[in-house]
Amino acid sequence: MGFSMRLEKLWGNPVTAPCTRLAVQMGKDKAATMLLLRFIRPTCMGRTREIFPSVQVLGFVRHSNLVPLWALYVGPRGEKLLVHPFFLHGSLYHFLKDGESKFYKWDTIHKLSVGIAKGIDHLHNALAGPIIHGNLKSKNILLDVDLVPHLSDYGLHLLLSSTAAQEMLDVSASEGYKASELIKTKDVCRETDIYSLGIIFLEMLTRKEPTATNLSSSWELHLPTSVRNLALQRKLPDIFSPELLSRGKNQRFSNNAEQQLLSYFQLAMSCCSPSPSLRPEIKQVLRILDEIS
Image (cartoon, rainbow, N blue to C red; front, side, top):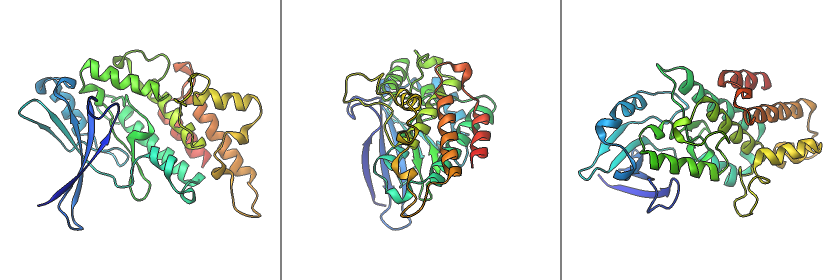
């Protein structure tokens, strides 16, 4: 059986990062199976017997909006591979950055939002004990051919060493997804997941990245701050991506559609509240999304 590989960066430098993703195609015909292998350096993960209980918990998680963990391979030198299914349509990040405008419309954004929220709800509420995602961002949401979202990387912090887990959190902070109260990875909780979810909602609404890393003042260019300032200046149309406001020639943007976008914006901002106690629970997020539709 032949196979081909594609290496992509998960975070940090591909050589020194604690994890890298490796897409492997087993076979060369149309029936070939695509796997997503996550290589983790020996120094970045605990000993097998220490992490095995968490691997078992994560391995039993199954939901239509979550990327399942199929297997764990442990090599002779302590290297480890996490085996997942591969999704050919890429990540939500690349869909928002490079996707065709004809696919970027309100119905798609709403569908994606509901799917992401359902995945989080399953992790938080449907298992024997809650699993906190801990690294929720658009790069870790994979899309299938029908644009159904599948959350990856959930619970990965449970398997990493404290140093590697903190590096993962630092990257999340630099990319704008980390709640301000979150200092150590061990402190991740439902509320910090909800904050990251709100950032993703704003990302989908604006098609802008959470931070503008090429400029010096990241606070002023942090997405929640930017859209809040526009709202205070009564410039709400400037918040939404132009594609969401476009309805073609001679078609007006209806009051109902405008209200849907406004309600979605308000939901996203409530998820991004600086106060954890003011952020909605995931079931409330789902209820509001249902009302918006």
